[in-house]
Every structure is written in C-alpha cells, then in structure tokens.
Image 1 (cartoon, rainbow, N blue to C red):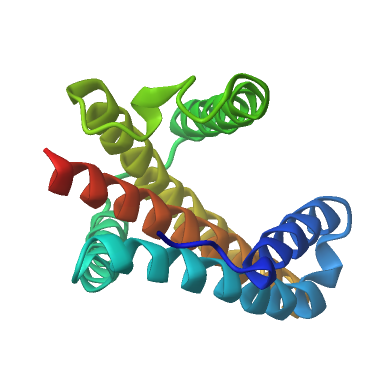
Image 2: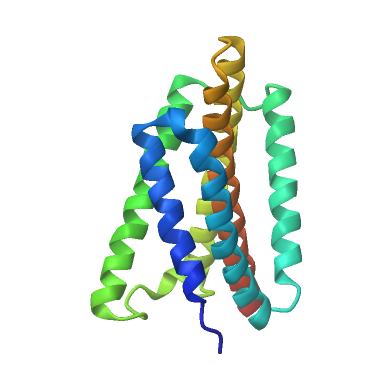
Length: 191
C-alpha cells in the first residue's frame, strides 16, 4: 500500500489557492506561478510515485505521452489544422467546466458514500476507459486554447504580466493532461 504524504495534500491546497487567486488578480501570476509550480510538483511527484509503486514504468510512459500530445497539438495548431474559433472556445470551455463540476460532485459523493460509490472513474471498464480518453482529449484541446491565448496576447503586445499569466494557464493544462494520461494508462494496464 501507499499513503500520499501530507506535503502533497498541502501542495494541492496551495495550488488550488493560486488558481483562485489568479482568477481574481491575474497580475500576480509572476509571483503565484512559481508557487503553483512548486506546490503541484509535490503533489504530482507523490501521485507519480504512487502509480509507479503499483505499475512499474507507468510514469515514464505518461510523461512521454504528455510530451507527445503537447507536441502534436502544437503542430496541429501552428499548421492551422486545428483552428480555435469562438465556437470551439465556447464548447471546450463548457465541457471543461462540466468535467470540473462532475469531479467536484464525485468527490462529495465519495466523501459521504464511500470510495466505491462512483467506481467507473477508477475502474478499467469500457466506460471508465472511455471517460478517461474523453477527459484526456478535452485536456489536449485546452492546449489549443492556451496556444491561441498566447498568440493573441503576443499579437496585441500585452504586458509581461500577461506572459506570466499565459504560462501559468499552460502549466495548469499540462499538469491536468499528465494526470489524466496517468489515470488512463493505469486503467489500460488493469484490463
């Protein structure tokens, strides 16, 4: 068995605080961005160690897959194969908020009904694997939104604070993508 260290839980709380803080004060990104990176480093490191304990070599696979997805999405975006339109932006943002809401409700249900109450989130069933593929795909499309956000900001010659804020958003998406790929690979290994 493996217990997630307390420092990792502190990391996720601090990371969430940074996200909420930047929602209200984007100009603080140059200060909160590094704090978020360190805090999430503790959390992602602990989660990665937990997965590696149960599935040998999975962290290298997840990191490689995350880098590959990032590179593919960047190439697709730069070659205009994927074009970020207002419609696409609305769809991806609505789907992302829907997944976030679903995860929040699932967490509340698990707190009160027990760990096995929403089992498909962690089970290697076709539904569980399909859900993980959907969420990892959604995280990949969020990369396209991040690339577009960065490009539009550069064209508008926005301030250095904007660059920090854009980098922060990209970091949040990459962390999310990595964790979703890690979860997907674990489910596929259990099949």
